[in-house]
Length: 198
Length: 198
Image 1 (spheres, rainbow over the protein chains, first blue to last red):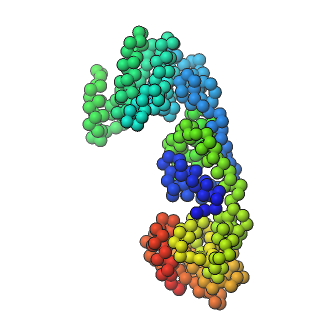
Image 2 (image 1 turned 45 degrees about the vertical axis):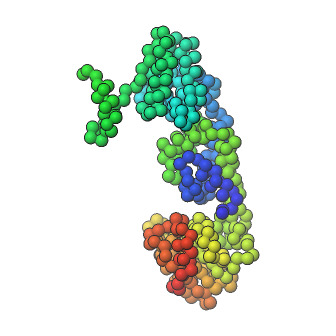
């Protein structure tokens, strides 16, 4: 066992996902010999993120205030909503610079076996938003995984009765720059099924 | 880019060794949805380790005060000194429960190509300790690597003229090229027990 504060730091670091006891020990010794100001800046960043950052009351993205930066932007088109699982997916879509609407972050995907039922996600809030605002298009941008597909199917069924709202799902297929030879058969099957005229 | 405090946390986490931008992002989102008290405890552990932990003035191990816990222990035999490279190596040797003397942490191994010359390590302090106290045995417990062996050879030469001090090197029960930190306690215990004069 290490001196109290060192062991405490190792224990706290080892609680983080993907960091085992050995990595925690290695990080703790790195921090022990690092510049004090650097370590205090990390400590402050941790405090700040819990003090200042919450979730957007409209789209559930991370937000430093009541609304996130995207919901606050008057140039974003409020008639189009892109539905994603996690806040990091918002960043991934933003990076394409192809989307100018708003987002809705579900907070995960349906997974009954893991106890993720519709009540655990921000699904009802999405339906309320679509009903309340003049939304014309909902893009289901959840992951092409079993759970994501189940979530998309659930949302498509719930959104179907709403008039004047078109619901779409992002295309599945080969990644750009990918190689047919290394594609798995399900992805390639989807790519074939989703073929379009040129 | 994320909201200011989130991006700040990602940037700070990404400075840690072995944590790339993607891991930093993943950790930041984990911390964002973690309990506030847990995150503040981690922040506090970081502050505490920099506020309270320094290095032992005698053996250069990590210490919460002037002397480390091992140097403070009156039941440890001050006539035997185990020389290791890093504080984590002290823990590795302690785990064998085969050693009851004191330690001397060099702070690394000689590596002229990386600029680690004898002046950069606590080598002179070791020689002073051995000269000043009634030390009868010095165990060179540095890693069985090229740099470690060079350090052991250097120390063996420096210690040779001192009267009444036997100098030994741990047995090569450890795989050559290995690292003390990852040795299991039985192997390391055997290596200690089978030490031989140099």
